[in-house]
Image 1 (cartoon, rainbow, N blue to C red):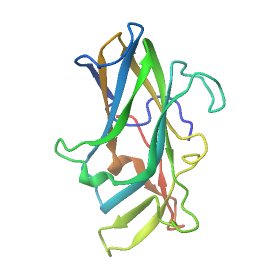
Image 2 (cartoon, one colour; image 1 turned 30 degrees about the vertical axis):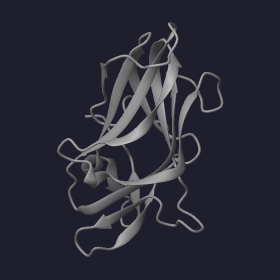
Image 3 (tube, rainbow, N blue to C red; image 1 turned 180 degrees about the vertical axis):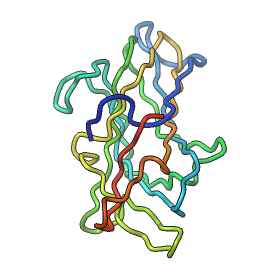
Image 4 (cartoon, rainbow, N blue to C red; image 1 turned 90 degrees about the vertical axis):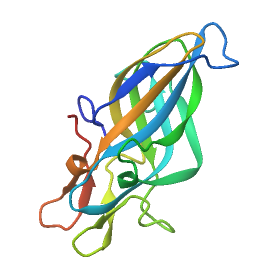
Amino acid sequence: MTMGGVLLAGLTACGGGGSGGSSADSGTFRLALTDAPACGYDAVNLTIQKVRVNQSSSASDTDSGWSEIVLSPAVRINLLDLQNGVLAELGQIPLPTGKYTQLRMILADNSGATPLANSVVLTSDKTEVALKTPSGQQSGVKANINIDIAANKMADFVLDFDACKSVVVAGNSGQYLLKPVSV
């Protein structure tokens, strides 16, 4: 999913304490996910396989320079469980120092044994339906970020997801689409 601008609401970062074991020319990137309250859904589920970061905001998914946090096995998260300061830790990775400007969250496919890997549960009738995530499985849900990795420091980064604004109904089709927006 490649859209201009920030795709996930409220991206924030802050410098933290040291990161044991890193060299003088690297720091550590730590990532977590949170959510704002959603309207009309009892659950908004995403199954995350990996998160990729790059220093180039224009890097394609096949370009060099990507670093990855791989979640093995993939982690299914109900974004609505992540409210009021609750965070889901997605991992951390040592990175060379510098500014990182692109993040991509790679999601599992809604197919085979996991047709509802990414889904919404409707408040109205408790029905769970597949959440379409265009390009979420191939190139990933893209966010333009601005985070500095400093030598021997931990850079904490939180993706603040707004499910109410980012899940949309596709006309009268009954399909639900993930279209993250900036706030």
